Length: 112
Length: 114
Image (tube, rainbow over all chains, first blue to last red; front, side):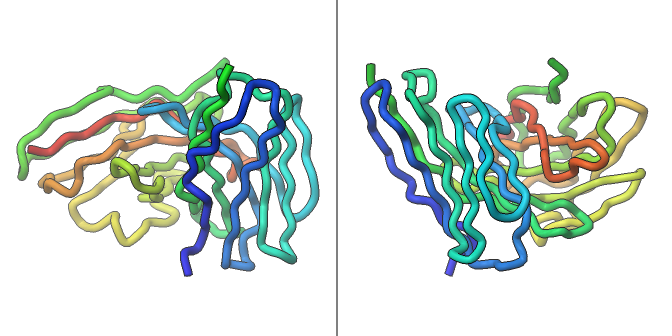
């Protein structure tokens, strides 16, 4: 079983839709959960950071963590064409090196 | 807004040659990282660096790789003898004390080994 899994997509939605992106993981030691946005051939851009279980909201973005199910989600409200990108989840344990383990990414396309 | 910068944006080299990839982390950050992404694959951790020493390294980071902070602003990744399979995007990242898992990435250097 892969450590962090994401559906690669592409996920195509109309402008204004609510988008749900998800990751599952197998390592119960993960405590820190991040979402990054990556445009083609660019560096990952940090969107959301969550520690342990719960919800976090920032503007149009909401991150949810369910550690009991080993499942995290990112919701995007009122999606825009500029949200079209690949969304990467990343996770970390409380390790000395702060290594992030990434999912493979979900490609999102928001159509005008 | 402060950001991580990387140079060059694209490096082409012959197999067996040495390359040095350069990064300038965000100025008040103390933790530095290198990751790589082979085309179409996941972002993979290579190494983390704090207080002038390696904190953790992955299996990928073998004896051909080294990192250095030669001065107060730069952070470098050296590959001594490049292989074809080293072709990838290399990302530098940094984070600050107390928020070490919030890692900010640079735009990457595309390394092409011929």
